[in-house]
Length: 503
Image (tube, rainbow, N blue to C red):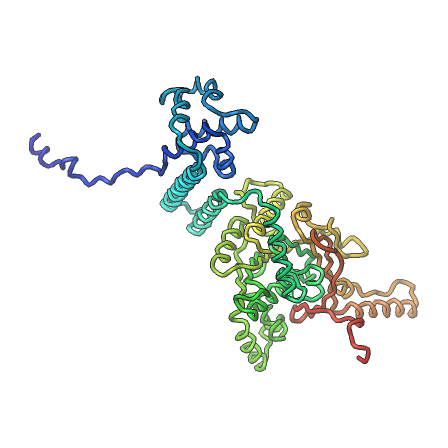
């Protein structure tokens, strides 16, 4: 029986065993780098900007490299003699020869010329090991069945991990010589000169606003705030559409306009499209929503939709989007289409990048969101236009023009932003404040008050103010715009001073 069972057993040598794959590492490169630093501590300066102790695959080498860095930071010499006492009692080092191992590292080093190449090789292998870890997490999460963790959430989490790995894994950066920054500044000035005095920022499409801001500049976080019904979303949509339309007219190689990424957390993509269709066709958005349209309106819709189909405006209406997911999608859009402007409507509806920790302080959450948006603007080198709500303190004042102190829930909005603008329409408050007759008031007094109210209404009809309360690199002030309520369209304001004398 034993012989029969043995005959059935497959010999171990005949089994097709897949070879075990070990995480990528290069012990020789680590030894060569440490030895080169021992021979000449100047070699440490060539790799210290991008190489950290945790990038070494060998834990002992990581501790040696960390100790070298501490000594050099103190202005001391790092060599086997100065490190001997530190590693005499190191049990892990004792297994490979004790402190004598440090001497062997120094003796084995031939040259320090290749020290930076060794450091970059070690750094690259570290990224590969991290990438393997991310891949294993993705596979394990996909195999695990969790009703609260769907596939879309796993994809976004994987993208966030890859983005974090790409960000922390960049070996470039650091201090730049001033002549490099100066050359870039001159390039920007030259580009502005070629555009008839306009700056290289993304044009909003509003002449006076562009004069004040110089356009929306790359790496800037621009806050557009206002009370409900002031027209925040309408103005942001107008700016986005103007920039996208300018990019379409200028062509892919033109400097005007930009490809727009519009993250709408409050309105759906269809509602935004309806607003833009109303603006372009001249048909009231309210009539479109109620279906109160005529046959000739459809002809306008067809003509407008033909013009709008190729506009480089991309809308993401995912509700409760996290900052990490927004960053990932913006990076993808820039890689695929060449992103030029990000619009967020509005920032209080975003979720912080960190996982939810219960009833966390709301002020801290908003601070994390604004810091995240500013980081996205800097990393992608595009302006971020984020809408924000205002507190109700505005309603308690006689003059309801917003102030910086009215920004809702966090002072970090003001601190982290480069530009803070408020949208204000006095017509909104006047139209709801028609005077009523007071007790025992004569007809003449009431009529006088009512006439003054009517005059103010007429003076503010269709008038909107964009109050630039903060601008890090330019002046503050107020810009007037014309607002058409039916089509929710803002336009350049033409005042009496700009009209011809014979008008």
